Length: 70
Image (cartoon, rainbow, N blue to C red; front, top):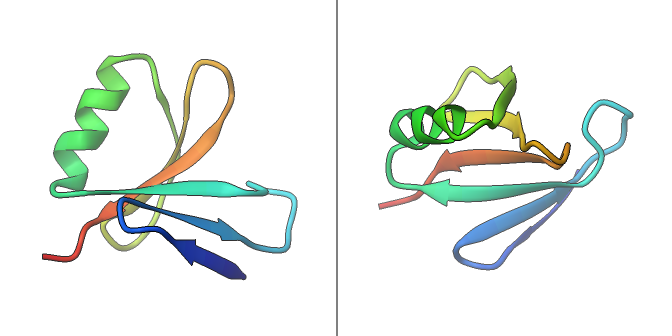
């Protein structure tokens, strides 16, 4: 896996066909952000064991939301 962090989001590229290139947006509260996104039509793709989850928007773009460092 290769990751690029720019401050407000990260881009990870990993081998495999499941997700391909994925943007990771760092948020203060993953559960609150996830609830807001799901209410807006975003679909949960995969819940990970840490404060992070894969989602995809109505256009099919897969992305993560993860916990921002305080």
